[in-house]
Image (cartoon, rainbow, N blue to C red; front, side):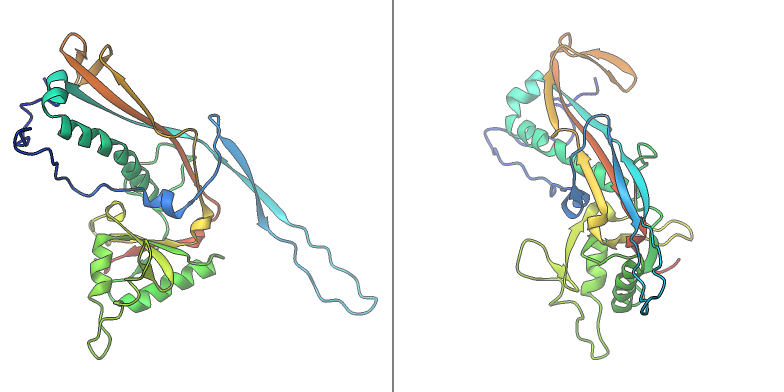
Length: 292
């Protein structure tokens, strides 16, 4: 039966040998770290936007004063559900407790990974009221890394924003660290390592994440990350991640109905309601590799 049990392939730790579990690094959500959180009720919320400000004009003595009106728009932020269920056998939890605890601790991170992949245009959006950066203007940072970063900063500025953060795939980090000037000296040694919780690049925090990379396909260059004015990206969650355990439910596993109680199993479920919108999408750019 397709559930995690003591015979699942790859399980080699024995309690009498080690209680330590070695695992890959847990991915946090880069989008939630860089973006701005806002309150989000269950039905969603409509946000009023000022699209343009009034403009002042110089006038001479007794000259006619010009009228200038602001323009307005609105965007609706809707929460979409995100969930994951993991079934276990009762014996697995009893005999592989350390491994079970590690899996349960890691599973919510899958939600953060999916949030990033969706906002970065790698995974499909859950609906039209969820914004992604899939169509952001592409800027090549591999052919000439320094010029590429400057071009990215300029593009964000032309969109009316101030570049205040980078979301870099691990592949982008390698490209920047290997970039050299005319005297064969590394360009970014000082700018990619800084004191603090995150490295900095051209004065703005750079978050290194596995969730931003998308391999080249056909004429489309590899996606290496994003840069932008992250104050323009707003996200919200109705509640924190909800967690529940059941040994009574019936699950559909690979098309088969499986009753947990009848089969000596239980399942853990994590749920999250999340919404993401951008005030101004032109204030972001997609960092890519060399054109194919």
